[in-house]
Length: 102
Image 1: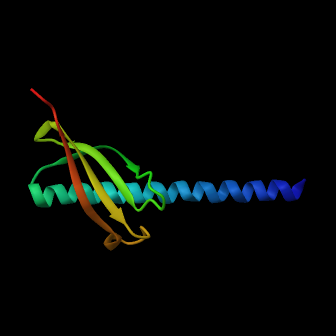
Image 2 (image 1 turned 180 degrees about the horizontal axis):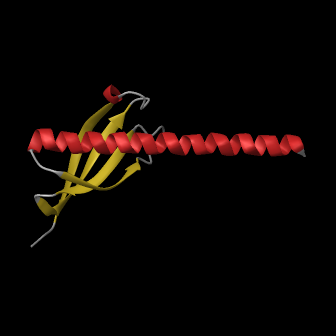
Image 3 (image 1 turned 120 degrees about the vertical axis):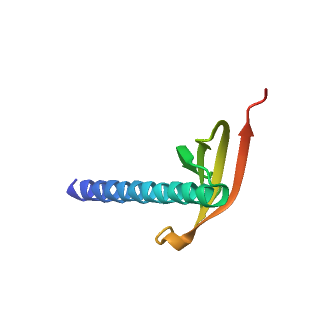
């Protein structure tokens, strides 16, 4: 009985550690997206959310939002990351636009 409880606690602790790492990767990816848009387009990117790609092995975070100067144009910035431990592991791979039709 005690052995099962210890195994369950170990699994729970391991999973909560993954969530912290995922949150950290998302936060860094959002920061990279904001800085990239500022540098390349001189616009302020407002992040509305982010998510990991559903591809096996992940490796990409999609950062969703819009530019403050053009709120009708939604954008998704694909940020690739390596192991996610250092800032140099993050780079913007592509940007997708969703402009509203008149």
